[in-house]
Image (cartoon, rainbow, N blue to C red; front, side, top):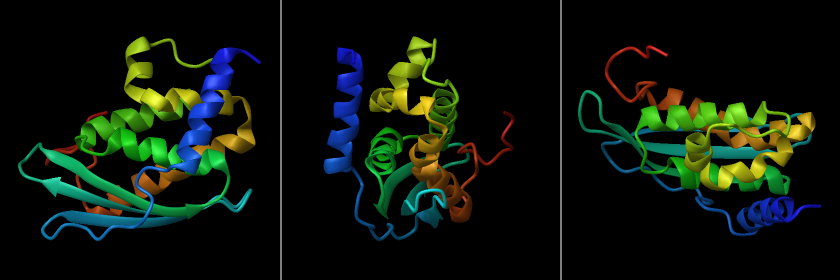
Length: 168
C-alpha cells in the first residue's frame, strides 16, 4: 500500500473518530431550515441531517450550519464529517459545485479527478478517491450528501442560492 493510500485511510479514520457537525442543533430564528433522514438499505447506515440557511438578498443564501446524527460504517460517518466541514459557511451555489465535484470523484472508479482546482476545493474529500473503486462503498460515502441535498430542498432555499432559476 502506498503512503498516499495510508494518508487517505488516516483522514477517513480521523473524521470517523472525531466527526465535525455531529449532534443536531436547533436552527437560528429567521433562517430557513430543513431536515432529512436517509438510510442506505444496502448496509443499514443512517443519517439525520439538518441545515440552517441564511438568506440576506436576492443572490446571497449561505449554508450557515449543518448538523447531523448518524450511525454506520467509518466511510459514511467520515464522509458526513468532511462534507459538513466543506459546505458550512458557503453560498448555495458553492455547495452545489462541491456536491457535483464529490459525485464526480465517486464516479471516477479510483482514478480521481484531473482538475487540481476541484481537488483543492474538495479538501479532505479527496481521501475518498479509493472508496470510488468499490460500488457498494460509494453509497456509504454519498449518504450524507443525499441528506444534504434533500434538506436544502426541504428548507425551501433556492437551489443555486439566488432568487432566480438554476441555469446549470
